[in-house]
Amino acid sequence: MREFLSVERDANQIRLRRSTFSGTFLLVEGRSDKLVYDRLVNSSACEVVIVSGKPSSKLRVIAVLEILEQSSFQGILAIVDADFDHLEPSSDSSPNLLHTDTHDLETMLINSSALDKVVAEWGSEDKINNFAQDLRTVLVKAGMCVGYLRWVSQCKGINLTFDGIKFSKFIDETTLQVDESTLIRVC
Image (spheres, rainbow, N blue to C red):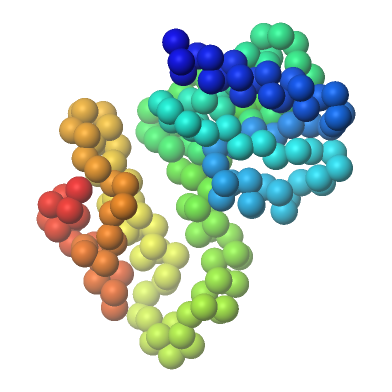
């Protein structure tokens, strides 16, 4: 019951904001999403709103969107991480609900020019020039290993813990290769 009230409270907060803002409200899952989307929208026409909490921020965003749509609230849009929806399609079908093209915003950034800018700014020029493989390919491959393990854990109810995971325990810092056995033990 408490979860239901919290979702209703989130929806009501957005309804109250309507009295001072006539533009579109964009619901997102968390602070890092807000930081990115704030840079991509016109703030005078679109306000990015974080909706987060249990059971998952994605489910809460969708629930708040549904509540507002059921009351014919105008000017509402939500962007959520696709997560594993590409592997197990979701039944969510609102035209106001958008999913990231890839697993999440971070994986979308790997495929964008933003990665090049981060590497150029923070990377060691010698290490970058001496890295024998395509960085994007290596990052995606390493991420897929962790991602598939998370998906299997979720599907099979294994309940592996990925919060606070120390990647240095199972990723070789020179090659960025994942030691899968160690990854499983760490989780």
